[in-house]
Image (cartoon, rainbow over all chains, first blue to last red; front, top):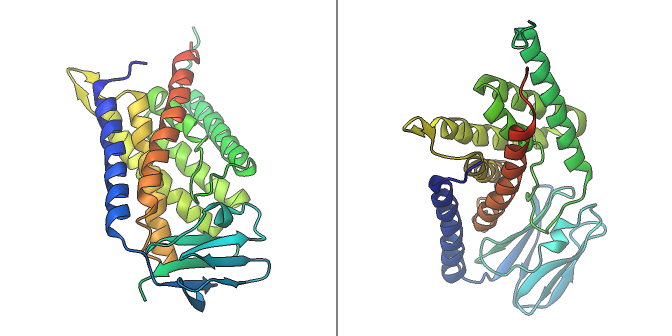
Length: 109
Length: 173
């Protein structure tokens, strides 16, 4: 199977778009001020990012705010994707746990 | 001389490939593969799609994908997983099938690898759009660069495997 020039252009364009979008997001989106915690489509907490806290949105979950960044420290779900997501701090960033119906979003205020 | 291109032969081959696609989909479901970013998947079943793009007609490719999506969702999925799976498959086929037809001087412009890369990216995009619609969280822009890149990588790998299979599996006699 020959790799054609069209393939290379396509791949390069896709990667370029990815890098551009990522770059634009990183440079223009500001850090948020508050974090919204939604469990089962109901907002259960709004926590300010500038205050170090720990919070448990549901049984077995441990959510931590530290140094202006927020992350899920522990979770009872099988894949722990929400934990692996790492820390969020910019407006629009999210930590999601689908099995637990937990959605945490960084908002402006 | 026996003809092996009868409708029955085609039906059986298509059914066989559907079964393989379904098994690959199940295999992927039970193998843990998390990179910490929701939605990043291998897309193993798309090896069959790539194979079918080269070796079968467009209708057969469509049928295999449709049946595989429904079977997977019925047997080990949920309504939500059906939505994601269907959206991803629909968008990726909508991109791949036309791309496979683009020709210049009677030769295809995109190789299976490029088509699979485009398919992988559009599959991820379809799932991202479904997530945005279902979760009423429109702030999913952060996933876009990641899914574009992983779409290229998984599309490339799956495309390479599928192209190899399409070249090596002996044609019907």
